[in-house]
Length: 317
Image 1 (spheres, rainbow, N blue to C red):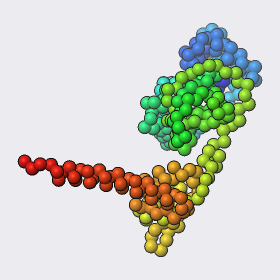
Image 2 (cartoon, rainbow, N blue to C red):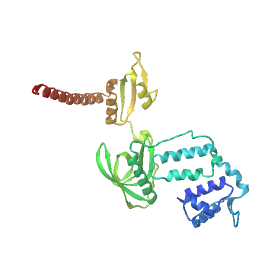
Image 3 (cartoon, helix red, strand yellow):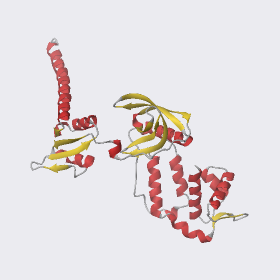
Image 4 (tube, rainbow, N blue to C red):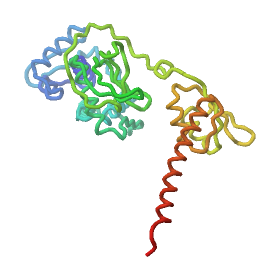
């Protein structure tokens, strides 16, 4: 994108004494004519850029503008590279690694010490996630809708959306866009999307609000759960909800109270805690847990009895 290239050129000019149009063209993989237009755009924006011809000539910023070299500190550059590295962890191409190479080129005096922040945004789904991210990025850039099959607790649906934002939150990737099926702006989780393809072009005439990604908006509280946990579950409560989410009782058990968004998610979590939790409220959750565990016990008891019966009826050799 042009704005990214202009920022990159300005960063190089602030960092280096002098460069040339061929060097910039090679670094940003564009033509010399494009670089000349970019330099003209920077001049029109008020940046005092000088160009000199002949041997030893090149492109530079006037000496009086040198004080702006400190616009980025070594710490700033470390943060920028950490951010690019995090995006590279889910990228299916070499774009971010190449961008890091461009930023690091000729800036060794600007980046001191070892990397202190390592961010990995990849997941178990990296192989399927990377092409989805790339497809969505291209669709946003070229203003094309994307069509996909979406799997949700309410069932499977075919969706087509105008994508506007790629989002990483709650340890997962999402796309925010205008859904043509529901006729509103929605957030979709990439791991639940399948068969994604780019479709028709769309005009950018919609007024696109910034997505409200607050927990209260995306996961509105449905009810409040009250449960007693075994002391061995303390680490999990701290990890999931924080150290102030429970009260330690005299017998060492943990009284837990918290709002939750949906019954299914709560049931799945409680079942994952096995016999280390006893739900006190709401009553309907207690009843659902009783019904689920009873049905599970019947299934395994039936299989166990059948296996035992087969073993008894087998003729002796």
